[in-house]
Length: 240
Image 1 (cartoon, rainbow, N blue to C red):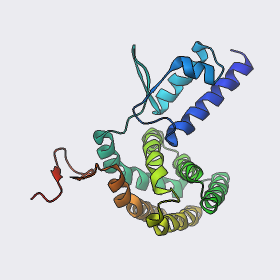
Image 2 (cartoon, rainbow, N blue to C red; image 1 turned 60 degrees about the vertical axis):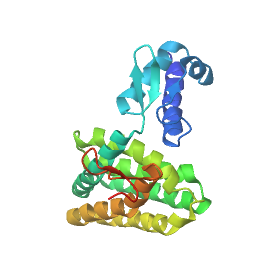
Image 3 (spheres, rainbow, N blue to C red; image 1 turned 120 degrees about the vertical axis):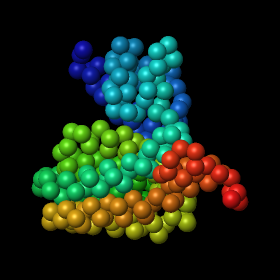
Image 4 (tube, helix red, strand yellow; image 1 turned 180 degrees about the horizontal axis):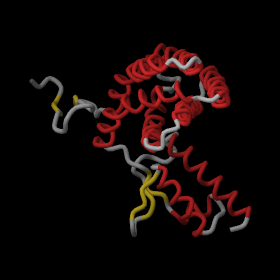
């Protein structure tokens, strides 16, 4: 494969990731290979390689004879998301406080600067993407090959949901967004000084800050669904 083809494939992968994370490609939707081949000026073989990479990262699902589907956000995946998120974030944060290097901490600080800028600019997509990058770097700090795949998959859905949480037009969440940004600074401080217990607790607090609003966002109107509970715990509002 030529350097030009490799570059186009990398650009394709990066752009599709961004479009999925920012909901430009809707959850559960299918990607048309012909349209994508034209969009990214690529032949089918390198495009399929790009799609295969994205499938391995959890962004899409490849179906035989049906093509590439953007990772759906079903009730099952959301329930599993709510059950796994606090455990994974806490474990990753603990390990990050133990293992972070100076270079990684500098990258985390640079990302926080960009996150703050996105907040000032009112840029919803950049807020969500910089938040995703911030927590992905913490995952790299953890340096655990068993946790990283789970964290990466978790951050895909968390970022897509974050497009609502970080939307500047949603004024009701302005205070939570401000606290979340401050907590990022606290993450940096705790990780920098190797405070394992503090990082663990902050990860839980950071999750709880947005959990209720996220749960409200993904719950169908008129229903009460315990996304962190066993299957079948669904009842109409007002029911006993």
